[in-house]
Amino acid sequence: MTVRVLKEEASRGDQYKILLEDWIPKDASIVIGMQGTYIYCSASIAHVHHKLEDEIHPKSVAWQVLKKREKTEILSDGTIFGTPYYAMGYPIRIEQQEAALVIVFPPSYVPKRQEQYRFLTGKQDDCWIPVPIEQVTHIESLQKRTWFYANNEQFKTNVTLKELQLKLPDYFIRIHRSYIINIYFLQRISKDLTSNFVVELKNGALLPVSQSYINQLRKVLEF
Image (cartoon, rainbow, N blue to C red):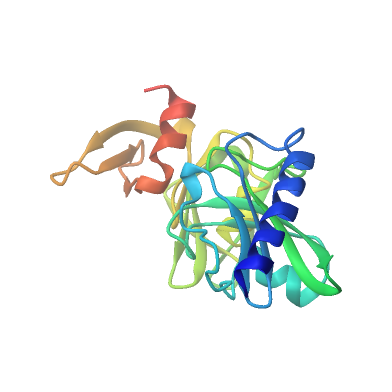
């Protein structure tokens, strides 16, 4: 795109930003994608990965909006940019061309939870067993499968961590792209030999805390 066109799109993006500031967090980012690249970017400190004229990632919400032409929401586990985030995208038109307006919320933002699980149904061998949610100590994503643990037993479920995160009670917290824990089973938090945080559960399980999630864990547990 020419410098003139980019300036025009920047002006239009700033207008969207002013309109949206009343209902989005101050540290959210606003980006506009069109023709495979980002043509406007007002990024917060938490989202420095979004840059003007970057190519749109095939797994991003902007890509999905341009493909489906409908409002799209994504709760990312950090696979795309290394930092978890929640984003909402809307289809718009700019000079008769399809575009995507995306709001990227700060990492601390958690979208409104859906109706909460009261139990999880897990599979062991050829049996399906309903387990009360309060008995689940932690949930793990391993080799493209999801497992949960309760009463020192392992169960397989078809529900992904991303889906579970929206429907688990608020005493479950994600600590890693591969782990969600029930904080009522948390024994202690410490650091390993490389100064990375590790949580120990009451059943003896030791699980790593990734840098992407440590601030949220600190906020919830106030340490």
